[in-house]
Length: 119
Image (cartoon, rainbow, N blue to C red; front, top):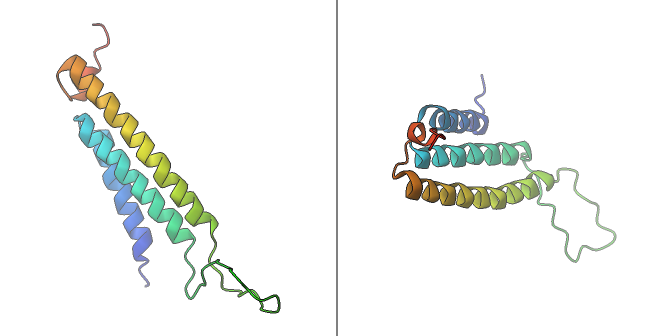
């Protein structure tokens, strides 16, 4: 049986992130859980684009008579991952800024205290 370590790592990262999001009460820990889920998704995208013995899809000053290698790595998952990283940083900054405002208003980071919307 062949163990595919990157896919197992993806499953573990997403499971740990989901545990933090679903079962932790501290808003900072929930934000860290969301970031861990994002890291798992990014690793999944990179793992999908991996090809053993693949060549990087970079062609600069390529002579016109040279054939394109058939084992070229797909650039789309790499581009999606870079985009996902940028979006993830922006989302994390937004979550942490909301967390700061919630702490200023409620003087607590407990999600059960924050759920009271009657005040």
